[in-house]
Length: 545
Image (cartoon, rainbow, N blue to C red; front, side):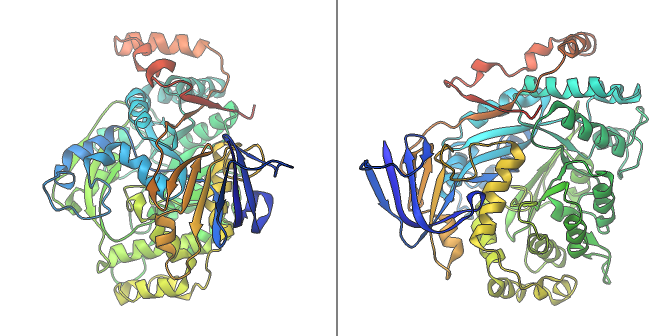
């Protein structure tokens, strides 16, 4: 099948394209313009924006915490209840099927679930496999597990830690390594209610900093593309910018990815002891090129917070709306599920909303900052079009600013920021940079040979949100899957996985450990190739070494 997208405004920063031109697709790949061939189908996209399919590196769309939230909030997906639009759990279909459809309608073709503990990976993959159209991957959660902490207590054998991480990826079919408040769940189980970067993990005698450094080095040693994906300490607390700044320094020039940085962008200015410190934090990111971040932006609406940061979630129970929550302690990681309503009239929520936008606008390199709301924690991913519109229009931001408390607005720098994102910067942040960060060389760009993941948008300066919410056309692997925001074709997405080489002696050690500690075979927790039940479901991503 030969397809020509004719006369669109092609925005492809990876290849320096930002102007009118054609895109050619043969079967599942982008190709050079052929000579003397008549296309089977031509789409006139003149006056429209043409980009590669978008990539979301951090969105909680499957797994135990997500399903606990569904069970906790049945009122948000009962057919007979008048439901608010655009909540993360509006219908039962959001469980899996609608997730892929809604992402595809916005032009997204790859989504990463960023927090899957090793023992729940099989269920997570099975659930992800039911999400149509988009390709998916998981980040494997480590940093709280007894086996790893014992390795560190015994001296932190670098080779053994690297082998352990590679084995964990093989067990879970993961794409990268995630750590969540490293050591925090162990501290919580020992009745700690605060936990900082240099606090010691009870019983094991190592600090969160030491765990982070060991994991950071281990990820480098196994040669996967994505650096350690870190949810650091003291999320959501006034004055926690100090923690974020110390974590940036602790990276010591090595690659590190800091998750949902907005939740660490808080100072203590003002009479309430809570202010935006996003400008200070953005300045530090701008001088730390080895670190990438995603924003985790807040938007004003009902949502539900889900996290394995059990200390933070326990502290949030009193703010739950509706007033119910789930906190549980578990082997490897605890977790919490707390519903939350972000309101424009709330001083604290207004600061959070502004801080996220400040990070987007003040971090100068769009390849260093990634577009997320930490779905559903800051807002559901269906708010992405509104966020795109906000970072592309100062006038629109000022309209929203007028609706938040004056006291909050005065404790941010947002009103003074004139920057407006261009389409090229949007494409860098949501296409080129995520593909590079994850090691996905075949997407994020429109180079001949790349996957034919293509999104076409109306160019409507008066309503950017509408344009990004309902893509004009979306192709996945050369298949037309969306036309004017409506799904036209369903297909099965891939599961993306990294498989670095390692010494299999670690598997024998782990097998003995599982027999002795759990009385169970470690094989019970492995994700087998046949589990998904789809031909070629897993696609291996090349490692660097």
